[in-house]
Image (cartoon, one colour):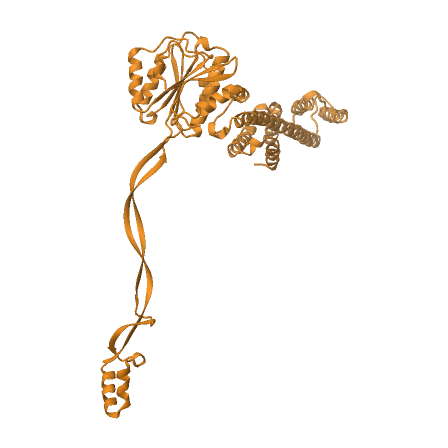
Length: 502
């Protein structure tokens, strides 16, 4: 990367904090590298001197091959092409230079005239004429190439500067949108990097405007934000207990005799330790006859003497196994969101529903929970956000609006189908709608009851402030109603405290 772009990136990072993010830096570097490879092709494509360069190359080839070197029409043709180059971009050849070339041509024409029509010109005169023509054309080509190089180089520098300006303006506009988006998401405690990888997703201005609009709506509407924060706590991990055997060691301190210590008398023993010999043994030394007996006992290590010893403490480690009870957080389950995009949701309800869906999807990704989105009207559209979240696909999903009537049954059918998959076991299902629709079929309600027994949870969010009238509310573990006019949220069906943590 050139010093120019290093300097410009540094300036952009001063202006936009988001430009310091690693994914943004990667994106900027990729754009600049792509620019470096594109610029050569663009210079060739946009080159306004292509015709002039071709004409000059042809004249040069003709000159080198010797064809028409001494031909006055070739000189005139080259001069005409040179004049055309000089006139590029409303320019023209200098009068002094134009006069010079006209004089050269006139001089050659004068030398071509024979003194007599029936008498050929002398060979020396022909030789001088050809030398003059050759010199004239060679000089003309030098001036032609010099002017062509100067004009092309000037255009190329200006073109590169313009291409750089265009790229820099594009990057500035993109970073401005990214900064606005980052600011909007940060108000919701959402890191943009959690939602998407900027180095992989290629977002249009329309894409950026859409997600920025939803993010700002979430940030500015206190009621919607409170609603999102409440929904974001669905199925906060319950405390689970389990038993497990663990291997440990128990340490005991034991006091044992220390035979190398001479702290106290612990008995009597045989030996040859004169220092601790019994008095009666030492008394044998008082008489010469008994002294011999002492010597024999000493030699045989059979002298009786005090047995001395001390005590020391020693730590002993004994392997041990015990059964303990472990308390741990259960992993939060997947999320399935069914959002109503029917005609009755048009306007503010649909905007709220999609803003909430964006928030739920973001939270799921941040919490490393699998997330599956289903939009429904009379038909359904699905998007699986497990793994990497492709923001372009998410925006495309949220921008859909079916219109027409409402039938939630197909969406619920698809959601129940997903709950059978290993990745979506014990899911939280949230239905966002105005619930202007008929109730679910009996067999589907029975199926929902079975799934609830398997640990799945079912929640509803009614947009419009009214609680659900036409639905069997027994299928829901939690139910909210959002009044868009008053911007407040009501919890219509209590949720068990240990399932939703504050």
